[in-house]
Amino acid sequence: MEREITAIKAQKRNRQRVSIYLDGEFAFGLSRFVAAWLKPGRKLTEAEINKLQEEDTYEIAFQKALQFIQHRPRSVEETRRRLAEKGFSDQVIDATIDKLIDKSWLDDLEFARQWIENRNTFRPRSERLLAYELRLKGVADEIIQQALEKFGGDENKLAYQAGIKKAKKCRLDTKIDFQKKVGGFLSRRGFHYGIVKPTVERLWEAFASPDEERQNFNEKME
Image (cartoon, rainbow, N blue to C red):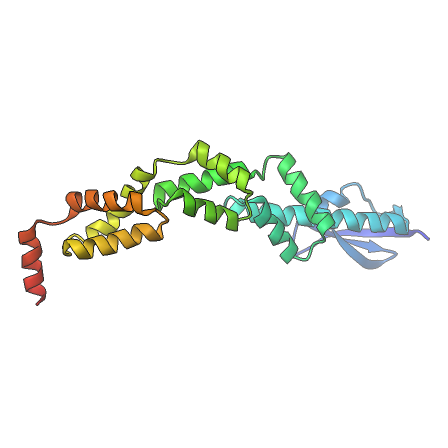
């Protein structure tokens, strides 16, 4: 049985969608993209109606994914999880992910590069911790390894950069306290002992206040 399109009206809350009226009654909503070829007076079979609604589901998923990845870089797995949370089927999710990858809008190697470079610039940490964070984002181990080899930095330099702010805060501490606080901080950033120990010594030499200044500070605090 065929039903006739009697009206196509823009939706007030979302101008990118239209409401389709069949035989004088509201039937369903569609994205403008899916509904572009429809006109009042056209008759639709049940199979065509089902096809339109199916295409609309794919389009909605694609637009939801675009909105998600436009806020900041996302991994493939993050995007997949987001679409699953929105209730889309595995079939729709797979097709959406494939489309985004084909358009180079999703790329886990590029995502890993941006993640590593951002961390190295603003919050330096070890490669071990970077790898752990990327795994949580769903990036495959082989891509993580490739990204670290191509975009990772010198861990001795990164450890030093990471410790500067902490060292300045602890500059009036005794050397033992300085070593504990700065060393503990660097360890929590994932750096191993072989890097932490010499880095703390370098930071102590660079930022610790002279004994006299430290003594005067401690006397004032007492």
